Length: 378
Image (cartoon, rainbow, N blue to C red; front, side):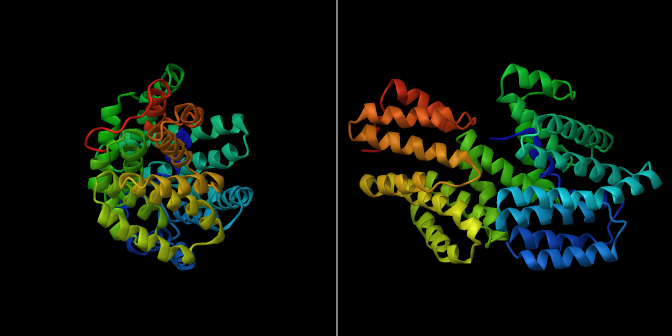
């Protein structure tokens, strides 16, 4: 489920050169690209060097803290990741407080100070400390929005704005009202344009923006033709990033490029051994889902069904979008087998996730009227 909190993870790579800084950019980007490509130890080593060499760089401390959290997610139990995040932010907050105090007109320091404040909400969210979530997210986003308003030329700065606007556009009226307090629009098309522009044209934020827009087009808007434009680049730039290869594989399947998708699945199976234990728990069921999906497209329903059941049984992923798609796919196969009463149970499971995915709207439709293969699909 997309939450407002995610905006603070998506502001990691801002166009620092536009804020009047360039020294250290290449070294910091090297460290950032390393953690996106799962070269975790090298990432922290490079970012530690960057912090020592460029201590007044506006983004280096926040990117270091974000990398520590990102890496902890891949290696540690969930509660440990929250402690890692809190400790990292406790370390960098005093640095930003001093930089903002010493340079009150510097927008770069304010931007990352706000981002650091907001990112604290991620830890509070995981611990279900709701009052802290609201206070921290509002405090951080207020600072970010002010910086974005004062720097309209920053394509990257529109990314968090677009994410919040998109979330509001697909939410209930209460959420739309709360978002309007920030002075933001809840137009879906305007929001998608902001995120897409950041993915296409930014120098720094394009990585996160591409991941977000691909996620939206693939699992919420159900527009795989647009999703693949972004997943292809992510997959090429970060070949060791398992998640990026997963979403690219699904984009290929849903664009009926099945031979290419099987090639990607072969690579996913080959690279699975290189994942951490935590990542294997997450991505094993994701991989089984992709295999079940391509087998469904190939009309090999018995094999697909077996993998669906395995993926649901072992599901331990962070994204329940994939789980919803598994329930939907299982329901479809049961309908193909003329077992609609059983299929309805899994459509209901999907609907119960309440995660804004297109799978929910599909499940609501098939709950009433069974899924039937079209003439072209038979």
